[in-house]
Length: 282
View 1 (spheres, rainbow, N blue to C red):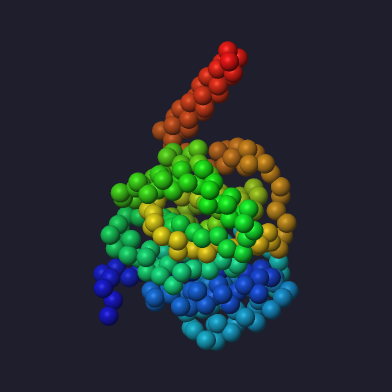
View 2: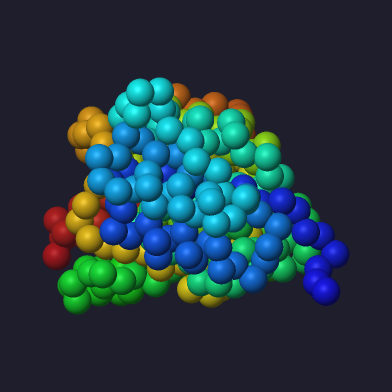
C-alpha cells in the first residue's frame, strides 16, 4: 500500500527517431518505475530502423504504453512530434525521457514525493549523470562552472520558486529528461522554437520565467552523450545569441519582467566597462 496522499497520473513522453538500439533501456527504465500511476506516450517520427517494432512490443506487454506515428510514417521533426504527443497526454503532469536517455527506477517516485510536500510546484527538475561519453565530455558536464553554479542556486531553494532571473547568467540543463511539468503549464508554452536542436532550452526558459520550479537533489536521469541527433529533420543553425534574441522577441514578458531584464543588461554593461577600465590602467 502506498504511503503517498497525492498520486496524480503522470504522462511520460518519449519522442523516437532511429534510436532502436537504445529504446529498450529507455522503455525498461520507465516500465520498472516504482511509482505506478503513469502512462507512456511514444511518438515515432518516421524511424527507418527497428524502433517501431520495439515500441509495439512494449505496447503489447503493458497497456499503459501507447504508440503514435505520423500519417504515412512521415518524418516531421521533433516540434510537431511533441505537439501531437502532448495532445494525447491525459496526465496532470507530463515527464520527458529522451529516447537515448533512461531513468533511475525511483525517478517518478522522487518527483511525486516532492509534490506531496510542495503541491504548488509546476516544474520539478533533478540532477543527471552523464554516460556513453568520452572522459573529456564527462568533465565538461561535471566540472562546468555554470552548471555547478546552477546546481548551487537550485540546492538553496527551500520551496518552489520562479527562478529565471536567478539562473539568467547560468548554463541551462542539456536534456529535458530531467523535467516533469504540470500539463496545463506546458500547454501554455510556445513550442515553436526557431532552432529545434535547442527546443528544450526554449521550453526551460519559458517554464522558469512563468512557473514555480522545484528541485530534487538526486541523479535520477542518465544522460547519454553519443554525438548523435534525436531529430530526423536537420535543424536550422543559429548562434546562441541569435537564439536568445529571438526568444526575447517571441515570448511574452510582463512589464516587471522587462524591467528586470533591463537591469540585468545594465549590470552586464557596468561589469564590462569596469573590466575595460581595469585592463586599460593595468
